[in-house]
Amino acid sequence: MNERSKTMRGVWLTGHGDFDKLELRDDIPVSEPGTREVLVRVAAAGVNNTDINTRIGWYSKEDGASEDASWTGEPLHFPRIQGADVCGRIVAVGEEVGADRIGERVLIEPCLREANGQELERPWYLGSECDGGFAEYAVVAARHACRIESALSDTELASFPCSYSTAENMLTRSKTGPGDRVLVTGASGGVGSAAVQLAKARGAAVIAVTSPAKSEALRRLGAERTLARDDSTVEKLGRDSIDVVVDLVAGPQWPALLDVLRPGGRYAVAGAIGGPLVELDVRTLYLKDLSLFGCTILEPEIFPNLIDHIERGRISPVVAETFPLEKIAEAQATFMTKKHIGKIVLTVDAR
Image 1 (cartoon, one colour):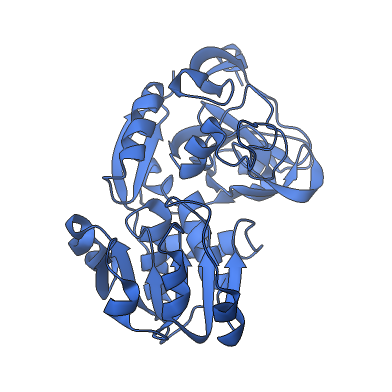
Image 2 (image 1 turned 60 degrees about the vertical axis):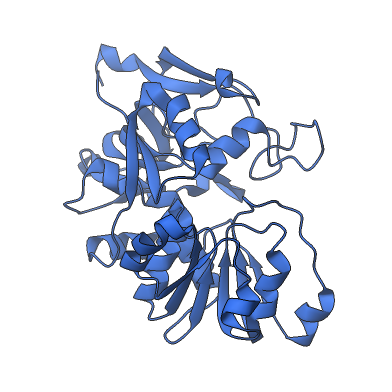
């Protein structure tokens, strides 16, 4: 590393609140990689719901509280560099990491089981419990910097880590396989569009819930059928007609998602953009022998499987728009309109 690499440009989240809590700086110290760690020069980083949710304190279950407003329910330490979707190259390594890894192009696994040279009792998320990719450099345990061989651009690759690993985790936990009928809510977003592709790759028949304007795009990604967000799923699909629900919305229409599941069906959830509080008739749950899966922590095999999907060309990136790092507030504002399909990605140019 040269002298110019002692500080870096990046975005600090300075507290819970509005866009004014995002502070672009060019004097953030660059951390040296510790034992079993690598330093990654960030090329691009994707924007996620969790970036906004963390900033506004959405994860807190107490009105007006911020102490538990993180993925894990633990206090968030400020300033924090967010960004869970990272593509870049390894530029330095710590002790116990081979120097031959320098120069590798990598995707960073967002769900961390090791940090600061220690195994974690409870996994962290990149950009939440530790600094992430909205900066020129990021330090991460070497095991979480996964080599990628692909002709895709850095921007395209940065669209994969968080959304696609979340979708793959939901499909893995729900044991989605050939012949399953899968209903995906919020299908035009990053996780939803990933779930459509990954479920189809597993041999499932996919029904996507989206807006009419985005219907054709979802069909091109692999959905056999689409429903409008205001449609009655029971009327359109019939009761007991779906094997797996991949839900990213929740909200007031949630009870119908269990109604359309067949007896023995599986429900996986990793988001609640329609509202986190839902009404559950417990009789539906036990009389139909349903299985419900909350999906945040990635199973160990998920990210290696995702890398394999990318390298074999089984899935395609869906990048809606790109912004330079300094326009992060504009990128998040665009993200929050929900008019896009796929991912919004920040580019991090070298100085």
